[in-house]
Amino acid sequence: MLLMFARMRCRFGERAYSSRLPPAPSVQIMVLRIVLGAVYTAMALGQLASLGRMPGILAAYGLVTGAAAISLAVALIAGELVCGVGLLARPRSKALPPVWVFTAVSVVWSLLAVQAFARELTVANCGCFGSYLFQRLSWFVLVQDALTLVYAGLLLRGVRRRPSPPAEPASRESRAVMEEADS
Image (tube, rainbow, N blue to C red; front, side, top):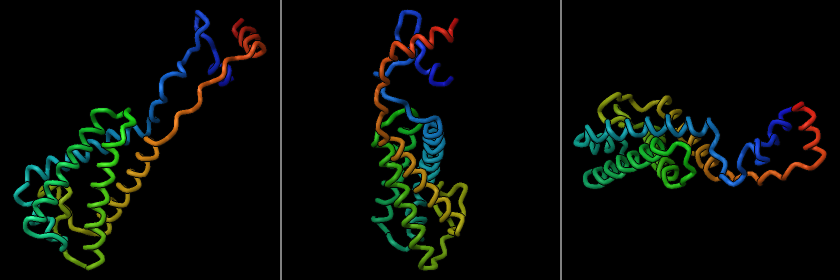
């Protein structure tokens, strides 16, 4: 029955769908892009509002201090803004750049968290939203970071999915069956 509806023809003999347009990402990927875009944009805005504190927050992870912490803070904020706005602005897009930037930012945050947790450093504020909505580095933060990496994989998979081949024209027999079903 579903196949019959998929091959129905319009009033003038044209297909009810166009095989020329590239398939849009699934609804789940589109919703994921909107949610992640909103979260990463909010993260960037929180970090931007507390820009003066971000180098100190990143220094608590024990990898960077001084100018390197400032550079890392600016890079993370810029990356979060680029991917957040990119994902929000075009949720149906199959463009790779916002997804790659999202993946890179997620990997950096995950590496910071994992290495600090493995070294048993006390990080009072993970810094995800700057000095707003802070939480200490714990297993919960590591799970959140792992989820962002899973989401990055899903986004990459959704973007790289090949379009399905165009549908073949209906045969005379199937047209006869469809006409009988219509009457």
